[in-house]
Amino acid sequence: MAKALTKSQIASEIAEKNGITKKQAVEILEYIAELAYKNAKNSFTLPGLGKLVLVNRKARIGRNPATGETIKIAAKKVVKFRVAKAAKDAILGVKK
Image 1 (cartoon, rainbow, N blue to C red):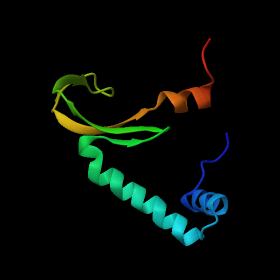
Image 2: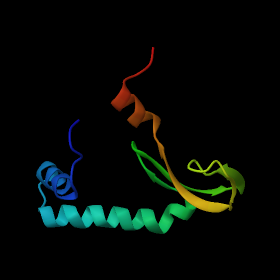
Image 3: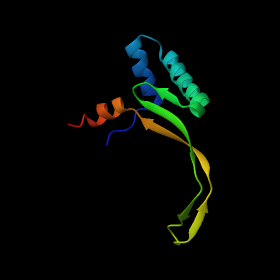
Image 4: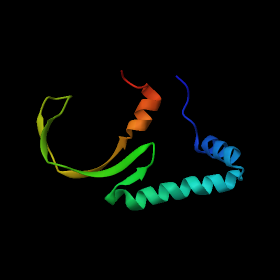
């Protein structure tokens, strides 16, 4: 399996494609991440990729896999990423 692109590799691809410096591309990436962190509570959409959403999970009963003992899992908030249909189709191909 191929290795994932690093932040530096992504920045250099963006810089090369748009005729900007690598430093400017890194600043853009960091700003997008900062925007996502600030706005995830209301949901943050990256067009064509997907959406960050804050979800409230209910309390539930779970099981310790090592001992088989049932445990109570508290309610909590989690961040989920929902992949856009366009991204799924581009990566997996369109179903017929």
